[in-house]
Length: 215
Image (cartoon, rainbow, N blue to C red; front, side, top):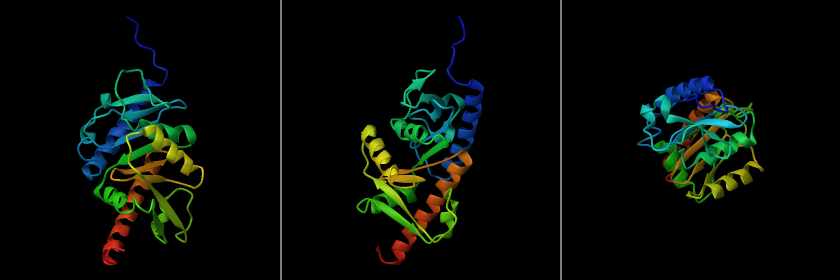
C-alpha cells in the first residue's frame, strides 16, 4: 500500500507538534489549562494549521494529539476530532496572514475577570507599563479594551461577532464569559508574550477591584 499523500509538510508538522507540546505543558503546569480544557494551534502554511485534538489532557500531550485542520476547520490527513472551537483559531489565520499562533487558556484569573466584566462587554486596561508587551504598542499612555463575548456553543455566531469587532479595533486577544482567554501573535513566542501580559494585567485589575471595594 502506498503511503498517504498529505497536502502539507509532515516534517514541519512534527516540529510544530513538539513546539506546541512543550509550550502547552508549561501552561498546564501554571494551572492555566485544567482538566481537558483549552486549545492551542499554530499556522502550518497558507491553508492549514496544527491544532490540539479535542478532549486531551493538555499537560500530557504527545505528537499524535496534534492534528491538522484547514481554515474551514475541517480535519485533514487523519480522521480525528478537532476542538469545537477550531473556527475561532482558523478565522484569525484566514484574516491575518502574519499571525502564526493562537492560544486559548482557562486560568482562574481569566475566567473570573470574564465573569465580572461580562455585563460591561469589555475590560479597559489603561496606563500600565506592560501594555508595551502588545505588538505595535510603544507607550503606556494608552488604553486597551479587551472584549468580553457572551459564551455560546454556536461557534459560527461567536466567530462572526469576533470578526465584526476586528473590523473596528486593534485586538491581541479577547475573553469569553465564564470560559477564558484567546490570544495570538506572529509566532509562539509573541503569542505567549501576549497571553502572559493579559494574565498579569487582568490580575492587576481584579486586585484593584478588591482594594476599591468591588468597584
